[in-house]
Length: 112
Image 1 (cartoon, rainbow, N blue to C red):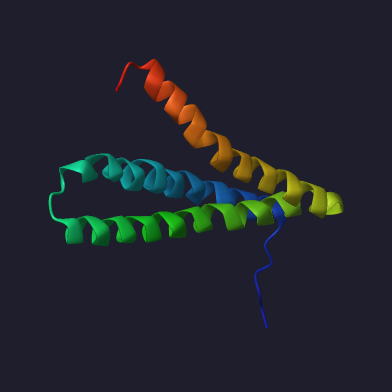
Image 2 (image 1 turned 180 degrees about the vertical axis):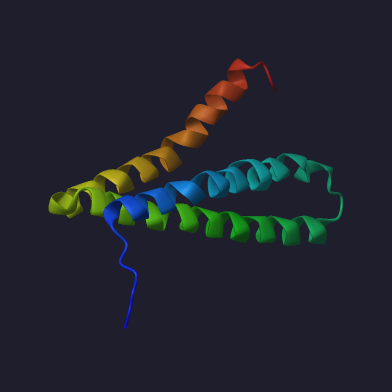
């Protein structure tokens, strides 16, 4: 049986080849559509589209976060627990402080 064995460099290149596409899809195409949801007048359509977009955004984040942990643990195999904890802390910190920082920037822009 002839199986192709991927090395660390191959996995990293494979990961970085697709991460930009997935991040672009999630951040710009999915999340920017939410800015136009205030124009939807039908409540049912609003709820259905919101659910669909959140599911697609969740899948996109899963496609980015899971391989990133794999690449991190391949890059630093001796400190897997530390690297995973640091990456989780960064992701959770972004989720915790992102909306707060966004609201500060929103207020600083003069929008009311």
